[in-house]
Amino acid sequence: MVRLPKEERISEFHLEEMILRTPDGGEVPLLEAVDLERGRADTSIERRDGRRVVTVSADVRPRSQAAQVTAELNAEIFPELANRYPGLSFSYQGRQADRTESIQSLLRGLLIALVVIYAMLAIPLNSYIQPMVIMVAIPFGLVGAVIGHIIMGYSLSVLSLFGIVALSGVVVNDSLVLISFANRRRQKGLIAPEAIKDAAIQRFRPIMLTTLTTFGGLAPMIFETSRQARFLIPMAISLGYGILFATVITLVIVPSVYLIVEDVRKLFATRN
Image (cartoon, rainbow, N blue to C red; front, side):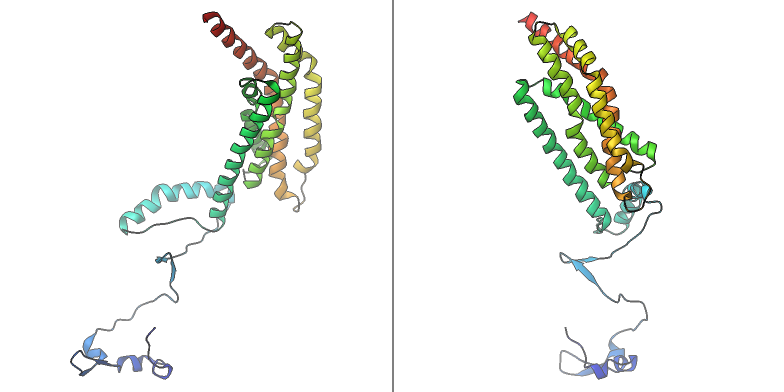
């Protein structure tokens, strides 16, 4: 950094009277070499990776509308600014960047959890298809978690996604009980329709009791009104309502998919 001594940087007069040295060794006053114009200047300049950075912050009220504001910025405002100022780029930092990073990490964790669940089901069942039949309940659990947030008036948050990831491991329990019981019935000589029907009848009470007790255990947290527990409520909603909704679907969809798989097996066996 090259600059004048401090005593020569006190007022504008010193700047106007500054003498410049010419290439041939002569001297010329600054006002004869340049045109001075008053204006505004940045008090500080920030750079990142060698590029100048300007930070713009905002707080959306209500926060549930932040995603809509972000979508409108990406669709309309930022493309217009990029056309007007070539070389301009933008990125989200702060809370929005942390949220995006957390969501991406959770999605990777969910994918790993699904693979692990599939492997753990495939080994004892000795089948590659039946684990998929059992895991059919997982998407419906996600639907139940979203419906639960709508009913309770909460927006989806990072903690809601934590609950959804945990839900993917819990919601398969009822389907596993149903399919395991049907497999034992088939080992005793029953055909697939009779086996799955018998399993649905015999396991109906344990499945419903397991679901109701799980939801009942989460209910105090779901309906808690204190400010201290408020940040945990979305995770409890995802678990509670997801299990409740998935159980109802499990008793209808899983037996249907089980019979469809058996029909497809018979079809391929007949052709062979």
